[in-house]
Amino acid sequence: MSISEPDPSHQISQRDLRNRSAEIMDGLERGERYAVTRNGHHIGDLVPIRRRRRAVSRAEFVAMSRGMPRLDDRKYRKDMDRHVNDDLYDPYDRAYGRGEFTEDGE
Image (tube, one colour):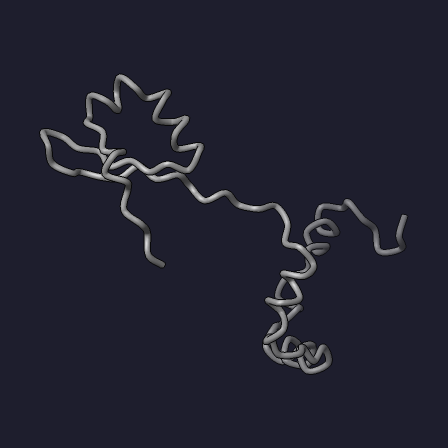
């Protein structure tokens, strides 16, 4: 993914960044990019972060899922049973050991 260079008109000095920080932050919120300089040398870029969406639309999900292989749940369960030993850890073992539960369900 290529990131575009800041507009030359948005070149700001270290002093500008310090003195005009609120204005620059507002610009970042609008999607503007800034090239920061110190002593006339370009030392970095200020770029807005990409906004994360909370949800994906149904149409987007369908489009993304179109090329995915179908999941065979029986084969998946068989693979899990073969590779995962459920007997290694039972969360109830500790509770029974501390007497939080009794075998007869009381």
